[in-house]
Amino acid sequence: MSSALTKRIVLAAERRDRPYELRDAQVRGLILRVQPSGHEAWIVTWAHGKRRTLGSVEHLSLDQARDQARQAVAEYVQSGLPALAKTKPTSCTLETLLNDHFEPWAVAELKGGRQYPDRIRSVFPWLLRRQIIEIDVPTMERWWRGRVTGPDAVTKATAARDFACLRSALSRAVEWKLIETNPLIGMRQRSAASRKVVRFLSPDEEAMLRAALAARDLAGVEGRANANAARRKYRQAVLPDLPMDGYVDHLTPVVLTAINTGMRRGELLSMSWADINWEAKMLTIRAENAKSGRQRHIPLNVEAMEVLQRWAGQVGERRARKVFDVTDIKKGWGKLIADARIEEFRFHDLRHHFASRLVRAGVDLNTVRELLGHADITMTLRYAHLAPDTLAAAVAKLAA
Image 1 (tube, rainbow, N blue to C red):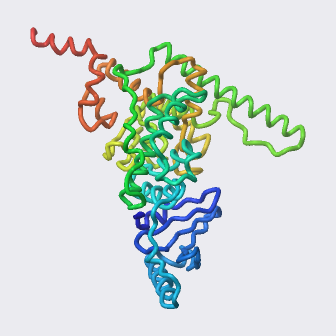
Image 2 (cartoon, rainbow, N blue to C red):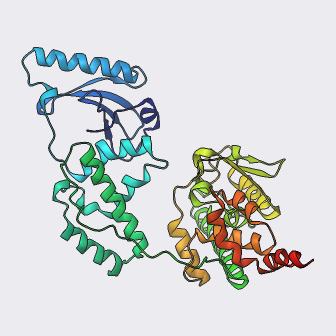
Image 3 (cartoon, rainbow, N blue to C red):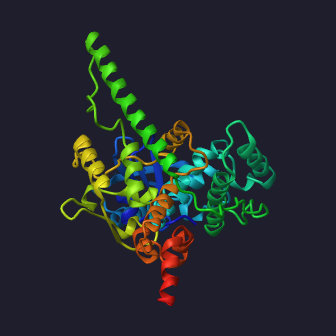
């Protein structure tokens, strides 16, 4: 069965380009409908597609809407119409599974839960209108081969994450009694071999990355200036001018902040201005944004402070709650790395680069662990080989 609506889900419902509905599992037939304008209304449905609007979320709480929905269904049952409670779903399309069941559950139960149904919609649009019981192993085997070898091929690691999202949604469908078995249970979980060597930037590569960032910003600033000159010439509305020493967008401050703090991508994109203590030169990663679920503090060095202050001055601290008001940087990062001519380097590797610089500077591994937010020292030990001088000095003390 589907998940019950909660006050949290109702409050978190965001407007989209098209109307969408969230169904309540506690009171069958109760629906929260969200319009592109942001208006939210309670609706009750019963047999044969009939429905009635109960009222807006502003005027009816979740509990009140449930009471009215129960009463409405009871009235129609008493009047001789087919009872809603007697209907029993057997299967559904993937689109229905995502919209009515998986997305409400993921948003309520998982950190960053909306990314999972969104990923399925983006990667498998051709499956959305198919009955979930018809999504079979041969179909997915063909998809896998095209995904990793076709003209728009991705890495096996990316394809494995795509497949894992879909299979997880179908496993939930089994738990919710929408289907009896997961049709992909016979297809082994795809995975890609993890890299055994920690990847970080060489001094030359870091210089290339910084040069690519600077060139990108300069081109963007000059492009904006030229575009505005043309707009003025033809008496068109101009775009906001960018400062000559500013950033064309969020990418440069995101990358430079990552280099100097070792923050994960999710931590960076969820950071708010309130998390920065300018006087103490300290950044707080709140527990709800940390992978470990534990709050930690990261001191801001000179470059990190300069980057964040310049970005704050450019966008205004109060313009958006988040420091970087974006949801993804994959496209911009991919082009940046290509322009810098750096191979086999992911955004997450900036975190390794931060750690490697600390270790080579003689910082002890436990301090590195705390800055990275590792739950235990095991993950941090991968950087131990980068500090041979420190290790040699420790052993030398035995002969002193």
